[in-house]
Structures are given as structure tokens and as C-alpha cells.
Image 1 (cartoon, each protein chain N blue to C red):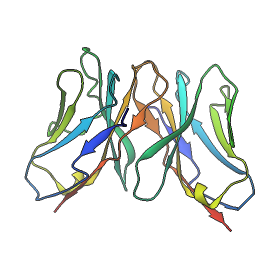
Image 2: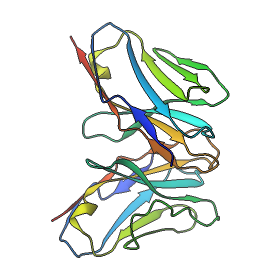
Image 3: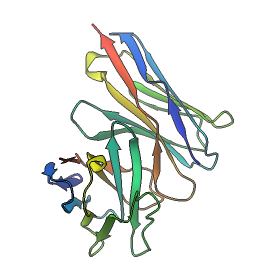
Image 4: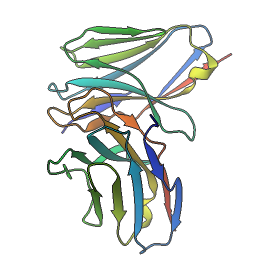
Length: 111
Length: 114
């Protein structure tokens, strides 16, 4: 079945760039998403990319998509302590609306 | 307008009781989704509704789980004869349509089955 994989933990220093990686298996995924979850809070949609795009930039966030390798990354420039959270990668399954989520990457930002 | 809202925010129940969780999607959104987030299983899709089409129930874990969406807006997820393994955060999301890029999530209902 469809699967989405992420590394579980990333630690960076404040001001550095963070890169969170994700791989997915469903080649028919049409949209790929990044969500942020802070402790005790719901899922906040950060950005998404359509499968016919290679890159999308939104302020400090850059999403890169390598469709051939089914690899997605999220780069956060000038990482701040407020960026500490769990980041979820998700792929929209084929021609359905449901999202398949990765396990989440905990980003720790050290001052 | 307002985002996706869910109620209750927390629910504690005894094993064997039935519970109902409510989701109010963003006004105008025709697609509505239920997911659940638990420590052991991560984020799992449960069910989704798109307009008047038959819902996709492929993620429901057992026949104790059911959901309905009345009038194309509010949805209720019902868990009958709750078990301890049903303890999780139940998340609702909505989008303009099934083919729309953005799914927006509500704050979730934290369910604890004792």
C-alpha cells in the first residue's frame, strides 16, 4: 500500500537552515503537503506542492520535489526557536482525497 | 470565516460506552475528512465525504466506527462500544473539493477510554 517515510528527529541551531526529508511510494500522488504541529495543538498547513512542480518557495520555506525518486524536502531558512515542532509530510493518495502521513519529524531548535 | 471546529475538545468515557464526535467544516467546503492520531499508529485516515457522493469508508478500523454528514455540512463520527485502543485524538479536516489542494484541520477531539 501507500507509504510515506520521514526521519524522526532533527536538531539545528537558531539561525541555521533546517532540511526535513520525506519519501513516498505512490507515484500517482497528485499533491504533497507539509504540516506543522506544535505541542497540544492541531495540524497547521504550511505549504503544499502539486506533482508537476519541482520547487515552491514561500517566504522562509522552500519545498523541493524529485518526482523520479519520490523524494520531498522542506527547507526552513533562518530557523527560529518558534519553529520547534513536529513536521508531517503527507501525500494525497491517487485520485482520492485522503492523505497518507509520515511519522513526523521532531525539529529541535537550540538557541 | 472561521476554521474547522470540533467538539468536544476532550472526552473521557468508560469502556463499552458509545461516543459521538462532531465536526463543523469551513463554510463552503464540500469535502470533509476524519483522521485519528495515536501514539502507536501515527496519523491514520478514517473516512471522507465529498458532496453527495458515497463516502470513502476504507479507513474505518472496525464496524464499531461510523460517520455521517447531514446536509452536506456538519459531520458526526460515532464509536460504539468503545475500547481502550480507541483512545486517540480524532481530527477533522475540510477542503473546497476533493481535488482542491488544501486540507485544513480542526483542533481535534482528545478521546480517552478508561
